[in-house]
Amino acid sequence: MNRRRFLIAGSVLPAIASMRAALGQTKRPPVLIGWLNTGSQKINGHFLAAFKDGMEELGRREGTHFVLEAHWGEGRLERLPALAKQLAVKKPAVIVAATNHAVAAAAKAAPTTPIVQATGGDPVIAGFAASLARPGGMITGLTNLGSDLNVKFIELLVSIAPKIRRVGFLVDSTVYMRKQVLESGRRSAAQHSIDARFEEADKPEEIEPALARLAKQGVQGLIVTTGPMFVPERQRILDFATARRWPVVAGGSGWADAGCLLSYGIDGAANYRRAASYVDRILKGAKPGDLPIEQPTKIELVINRKVAKAFGLTIPQELILRADRVIE
Image 1 (tube, rainbow, N blue to C red):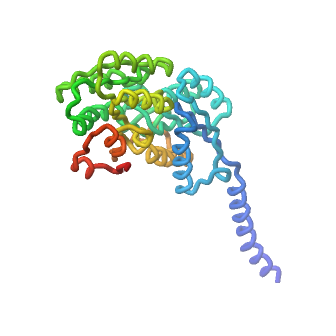
Image 2 (tube, rainbow, N blue to C red; image 1 turned 90 degrees about the horizontal axis):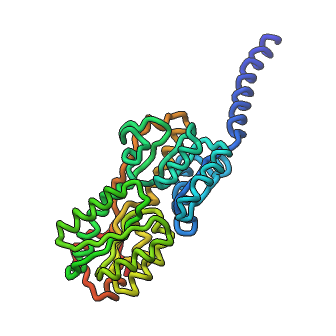
Image 3 (cartoon, rainbow, N blue to C red; image 1 turned 60 degrees about the vertical axis):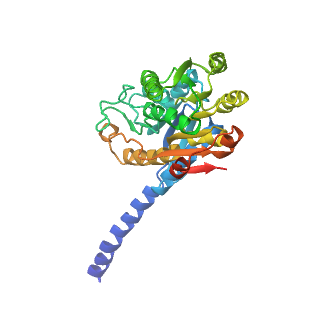
């Protein structure tokens, strides 16, 4: 009888211990994830939603497995250092940052915290990583190939508006890849025999004066180069251009939705969903410096046919067939 009780106890106790361990795991407090974004919550909030979707697809639910401490720069780069310090005080397990300026601010404020760049310019050029294949250090994530996309902007513009001979470039002079952006724009303009005029802005207050200078130079179209400062000011830029009947080309589908002739850029939401996989691996113990930095595999072309019609422009059928989406 005693032996039977001993055997029963011997089988039950491990089961109880296992149940307690499982209960202990489910009762672990959710980890804190920091979020530092150069953009505005009003315009870029869908990127945060995409990141949360990516986390849920990996079995990590907000409130149960993680909580987010989100900070937005609202296009003001000078705000980022203070916001990064506020995040660092909370000691997050990992910080999701975008774009390069947010990454730099987070790295300075929390040098021992893993950082995932959700999107932004080349981290190697920015000095965040030793290489894309093996970043080293505490920063990894995804890049958006920003300067490379600018090469295509003039090609796309002249394919719809072949009579344009002088094009204005609005350049965010604060981006880490400024030199590459200017070089790619000049190279593309020369290839298409376009007279390119460049004006730069380093803060939102400089955008309208820069556009006014382009207007005085008689530009016939506008290319808005990639830069986080321009996104919160998107409607103001497009209103200025529309009043002067400038067709506009820019990166990111949100521009075409807002009234740009066409946009050509990465699927930003896909980048943020993918960033969740980096966070997941880091929370499981991976070192950020060992995780290769990814480049986008898909570039989206969105054409606003309504804008083209308003400007009296005809979109070539081959371009329509190439487009990922056409706004009627």
